Amino acid sequence: MTSGLILGLALIVFNVVLYILGIYKPPTWVGILNYVIIIGGVFYGQKKFRDDELGGFISYGRALGTGVLVALFASVIYGVYYYLLTAVIDPGYMEKIYEVMEEAYIEMGMSDDQVESTLEVAKGFTSPLMLMFTSVIGFVFWGTLFSLITSIFIKKNEPMFTGSTETTEE
Image (spheres, helix red, strand yellow):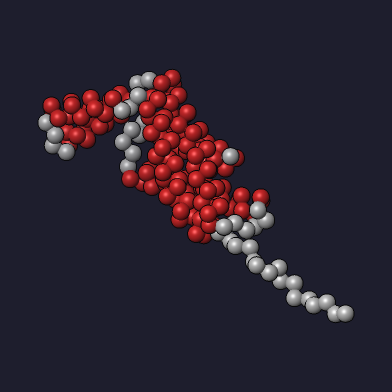
């Protein structure tokens, strides 16, 4: 839970920086950095659990489960933040996102009618509560995917024999 809290707060700080800078259409590097933060948080949580709670050993399955839980806790924290951002802190935030979407659709060559109908559909799926829910689901999905990979590097099986090769003589 602690690692999930740390990851959730790191993502919130990153998002606040983007918000302060007015980046509503983030460039590719921002998305990559976001994934790096998630991977780092999941890896940190798995490693910390392995080393601090399990004596330095963890199975692949346990590492995977730990990574998913870290992502779940972080996603709930981030989801609550995102809900507060869009519903309380800046209710006009989504209007800025819609403007960016509209510009992107026009650049893609959509007609005005297509742009308008596409934005209406998007608005139906972007209420603050729906954004919170989809944020949690998406985050858990990516956390699971990244955990599948990081668990390979985190797993460390306990040796079957403890290394004691002494024999007792009678």
